[in-house]
Length: 311
Image (tube, rainbow, N blue to C red; front, side, top):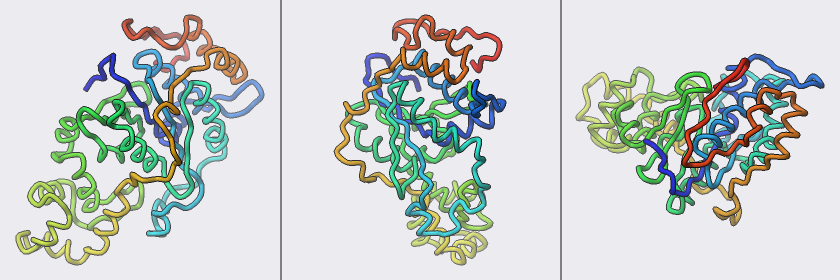
């Protein structure tokens, strides 16, 4: 699905997931004064590509915070299997809001909630005022996809190739509607978040159950209609499946104050960016700024590259 010029667009960036992706995709570059910068370099390249090809009218970068979230309180093993974040990545996550601000992208976070919850809240709030594009490194926000209002852009390979998901693309990949992915994950779980789901229920069986019954609740209400082996697995893990569904659902009412769409206007600070790139040692990216970052919406994107470039 392509975003049509002339439509007001709101870009919501899952900052942590993209920074992590950049960190693992690029060498461990350092700034002239020795600070780690590889993830910031990758993030900068991603942002330049966005502002060159599809500059948004409004934009926000949503961050996770270190405090426990409501999901951690609900399930103490939530994401418990994840290794600690490396110090050289933590320092770049801390620096990233400054980079986003210079691109005119407003950084936001909220204690007790994840970045995806803030994305869901803003997408729901502004979906009738602007075309919402969610840019993320994972698939958790696919449940928000709504044709004509909310789409998800994620990465196919590394950080250079992306793919857009509208309702048709979600259905083609999963065989389900976007909102049914909540019930699907309640059954299959999510290893990346340590969400268990129903042991023994794989993707194919889960899709069949949701296609037939629509929701997890309807499946349990009509459990006698399921094959015996499937029925037994669901009965044994009913509480776990119900908990899994609660963990998967994104919160659409994060208290972010009286934020207005105009507060998220994307106003790039080009001179500040040039100075900032110089301090970070991003010489190649400085060269790309000679003719400006933001492209004329009627012009073709500049896809030229040079040694050391990402795109």
